[in-house]
Image 1: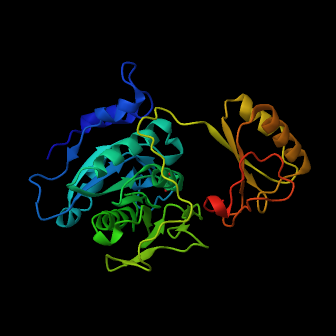
Image 2: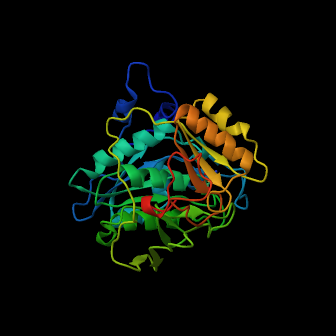
Image 3: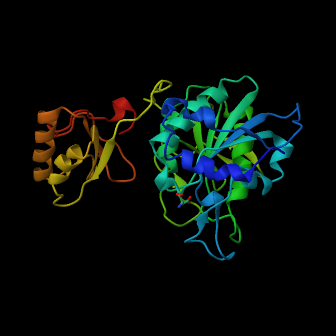
Amino acid sequence: MRFSTQLLPLFTSLAFAAPLDLARSDLHKLFVRQDIQTPVNASLPNITIFATGGTIASVGTSNTQTTGYSVGLGVQQLVTAVPELLNISNIAGYQISNVDSGSINETISLTLSHMINEELAKPEISGVVVTHGTDTLEETAFFLSSTVNSTKPVIIVGAMRPATALSADGPLNLYQAVLLAASPAALNRGTMIVLNDRIGSAFYTTKNNANTLDTFSSTEAGQLGVFVNQVPYFFYAPAEPVGRLVFDISSATDLAQVDILFAHQDMNPALFEASYAAGAQGIVFAGTGAGGYSRKAGVAASALYNATGIPIVASHRSADGLVPLKGEGVAAVGAYCGVECGGG
Ligand code: ASP
């Protein structure tokens, strides 16, 4: 077993600041691969886990505590808690960060994307698993779905209860995630989210409940499949979400700052200008209904777009639905995304 807990603080701090002499695009070269079992079993698939933190890696002070716990477990401890993983795969792990998912940042996202692309390009690797906090899990899932170019599976997994809780959900979720990453049935299905016995598409799945185990779902597009007695059953043959784009970000060293503004009755129109003044290079507008906004907000967005040309993309604050490509009174919208570009 080649694992050193002393390395964990180093990994955690790397996620926030690259050393001065290292380009951000090279940051992933510092992460140390941990082969969790030796020797490897040549008859089993090889799966790599990228651990980032979240509730799945958290501990509370009692087994009934299900809020207010803290991140603390490393990738080795996550795997040690589920020894059955080693019956179904050879596991290697990378500790990318150990943070709650609200703190996943540009550096962590880019590192994950670069490393996962490199990992999946190795013929001996069957798939990868990312352990992640659930609060922003869908954002990382969508980002990886849009930047990882592989037919092999990328599975994102989290937990709603900390590892110390009665009926903690993390261990079985992790087992199912590894099982799926190793399954030939998961090929050509892109990035998927596994929690609570369900398999969801990264393109459509969102967290819908702040507290309960059955939080991830996609109401309109539906789930892709389900686990029954730890066997993944897909409902349909592999299919691509309409409009999914895959960007090559292999040489990207930073990501554009895009702010999300949430519409509501009588929204403060100054938020558009304030966002731009604070560095936004694009704005996504979570509009009322199908991308709606108040007259004042429309005037402010229009003025900003006309003055700066930054993209202002209409979306919707409702959990589901689409924004039509050409709506009414949308002069402010620089790029207006609907069915034609993949679902709003
Ligand atoms: N606070 C956690 C997070 O990192 C919540 C979770 O993982 O369920 O998002």
